[in-house]
Length: 273
Image (cartoon, rainbow, N blue to C red; front, side):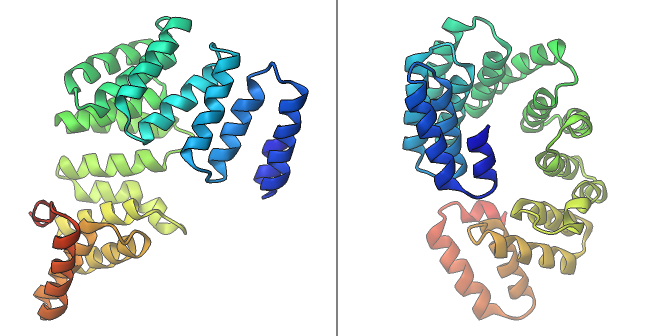
């Protein structure tokens, strides 16, 4: 706890020194290694260093749930789905049919685009905990990908009401409303984020898509501009802005940008369509 407080206050060196002292004082415990991994991750260290710390924790205690979950989530971010499956198998050995394991097995099926399995597993999770925001969010994402936009909205709406971190859910809700053909409702979900400071790029991007669907090209252009300013790698936003330049008579600028995008992204035709 002391190390976490130091980290929150910005004292990375002090936090790591505190963890190192705890490691020396309790070499038989997995917990300091988990704290080390968490702090390394929070400070932006290389994923390999974070993974090594979680692995050290599991060497000391193969039942350490936080270490297992840390490894699983890290492998998910790296899109190492085979490694994720192996870690889930290891978790199953120490916690058979555990809820966390079942949740991440559903996540893995979703990541592998096995939507039928993911859907069936998500329904089982909701039967156990129908108000759990993580289960609802996952079920909503799965329904969204399956084309069940109204059901996706229903799940995500419940997740939003119960979630302590609702921003991601708001964006998902907005995208589901767009797919369901209701851009005004999509805007209503992200409006609180647009009204504040420091909204992430995907908030402006989904707002731009909504305004575009409503026929408000000026507002869409403003939102795309903000999205691209935050995330220059947003090819959809950059393509939309280039097409706006083209329609407004700035053909040379538009074509130059589209040529850059075509060279950087072989799938740019899909973005335009």
